[in-house]
Length: 512
Image 1 (cartoon, rainbow, N blue to C red):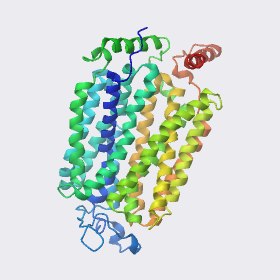
Image 2: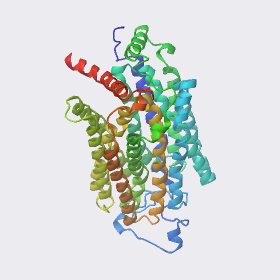
Image 3: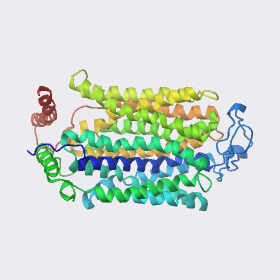
Image 4: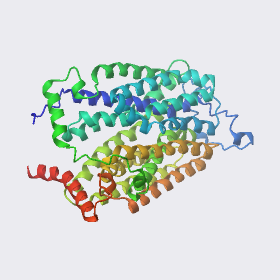
């Protein structure tokens, strides 16, 4: 066994850091529209809105009227510009959901392409196409709304391959006892991307070139293209193919992976047991929990800027700063929650199943509670909104110790495939959440927003209950290459051996 190669200044750490930046950029390209749409659309004059056609008007309290897209000169406010698009609420919902129509179609394809042509090529293609689509977005939006929708679908299609390809890359780059750290660094970029894009979008909406909002797309698109150059220099599909990695580090990674995973231990069925997967209650527990969690996340990400504009009347700069705070807490809770969950399992305070149940109940029911309360906030309660928003998004981070890890608990042999299916199904949350929000908020009144948050709350609670009833903490028989001809006793023995193979390293490390 090759002596451990230090992590500091290593090639694998450099790869994790540039992956962190890549995930951050991908998320800024994905979520920039939820903020940009506030200053793209003239919410003060929406002739396409059916409710206004019918003469329905829900006036806001005077203290809330601070039209975020109408920056005109007066004694109390700076000069502002009018949003140039007259899109009805349901049109805005279509635009916001378009990303997910593309995103859901390339999940499995991304993993397949990574195995065929190499994960690093897939990742750089994802960011390049995403950046190109983002740069063209202002031109498309001004040409026709459906041209803009097409680019958002293309953006989603390209990004659907990102995380399956990233998984494939770390499978050959991360030593077993550094896997959580290296993948954690990489995927943390997603949350930091959310933190970055909100205040940046608020600033550029107000002070950017070409009317403000186009500069959001231009600046982020250019940053993405620059990242592609850095990735091409630093990344490689495997340690064997990297031109600048030290011989010692390369041998360490290869030896650690080879000694940890023998062919018999990672053996899975030659054919993916789709029938067993689709009929497994434990798998559906993950699917439903995944969908519910994503519904809450997408509701928060795509709808809150509109809520803060419609109901609270906050200006764009304030919205950007407020919206970024909860994601910093979310990032912290993901890591703290994982530490707590591991501790509860290792000390045998809770079983694997009950740990997952606890995490999902806290995450989903807690988020539902605080989300519903947000709907009852109004003018002059900005501080309360910040607190509830932070609690709602922050507490949802516990789901990473719930369904996210539970995929690996129940089907380690097919985790990539099953997660891909689950992520595809959860894309419907991203599609329907903004659409339903658009349908329910035709006038932007507080009562309409209460209905939006109530729907999200019901879905979150239902997801938590379903997961608690049907989830499992054990490896499923079909996941470990168990032959149909095996006796019941042999099947049980195989599962026990598999679970012991996952437990013994922990026991040895505790004794050491």
